[in-house]
Length: 214
Image 1 (cartoon, one colour):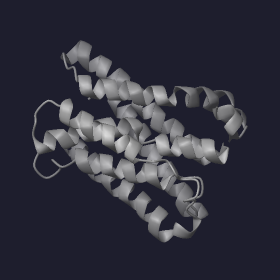
Image 2: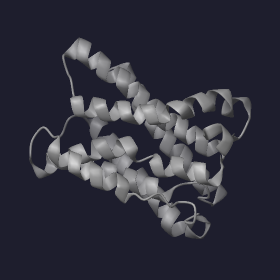
Image 3: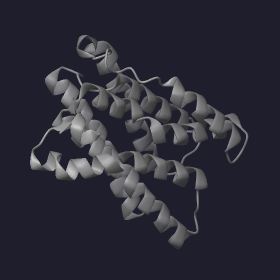
């Protein structure tokens, strides 16, 4: 494992913990897209179907369990524990516009036409666009809380670090995964505008608003 993958995993974990703590401490999930969180839970579920059949390392197994547990805990808090604070009126992104093309791509572009491989490919493509309901919600409401923007920044940083991880693995291990790289580039591009706004606005104490985001 190289430093970029480790840093990416830590950033990913920190992002989820930030979101969970925000919900738990405020006892509110206002401003958070439940649809994005359901999509992320679906990403981890379809990606880690080999949890009990393939052993890579203790680190790998623990991280799989942690991400699965935290993703479903987040969904539980949004739709069950604090459902009265969930802003369903603004969380209106049509997820079928993401799921249909992702499913189609998963059948067309995969390394092996088997159920597990197709679902793994599905998880890679879906992760690239799973944040879109959250970004759409920010655009619709016109603003985002600072904690939510910190969550988004860490999530975007995780994917950017993974791009460097793939570059490292290509040059030092000869490893090249076209599906993961293309999906990762797409996901990072979705965050580029947000990264700029985060550095120039949020870190200076300004609230991220619709005008900034657009």
